[in-house]
Length: 230
Image (cartoon, rainbow, N blue to C red; front, side, top):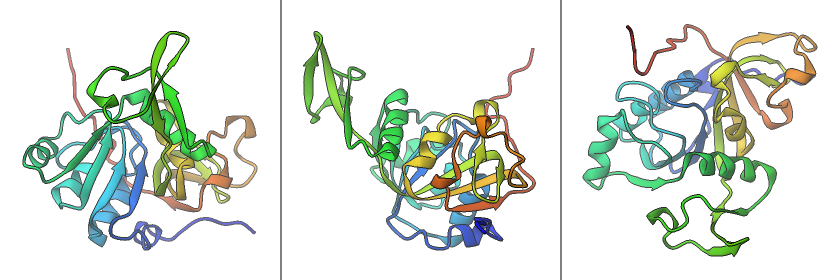
């Protein structure tokens, strides 16, 4: 019987080591694996390289790892909303590699699909392309970007079965499907675990073959990054 459930977030991340590379799902504060991140804070693992759209905010998400000086390098497409991120980068305490948002998503997808690199016109002629191989395709200059293969993937889904089949809900289906595939070990936290057979196979977004550990999370904060009222 395949059962990928683990008892706690601390057990789920127990073998994440100093200097590990992590592909982390989420967009802003939407669809982030907050319990797994909190467990990494408690574990105190350091020297991490994180592939993630952004670094959360100062006191939530990956921002907690930044506050604790556990991240050595961020590979991101957006770094706003986090004053500590800005401070560490400007003081030379944090390495930063910018990747256009679509390129970052495709780098994760490519790594998960076994594609070592691909060409894209995005960022050609900009500082992002400096030092990278370029080639002309159909009259457009393109940049060679490498696929991402991380030591671990940390993702957040809505529902799962014990075999690790995942369903994301609405905009939480952002970087999570791509991040899930590109880690050598994928750890997923979910809001609900249902019986095998209860998920419509046509609605499974990440097949269980990609998922190694499954955590049932509770008491999600579901913060709003920017509250706008009128």
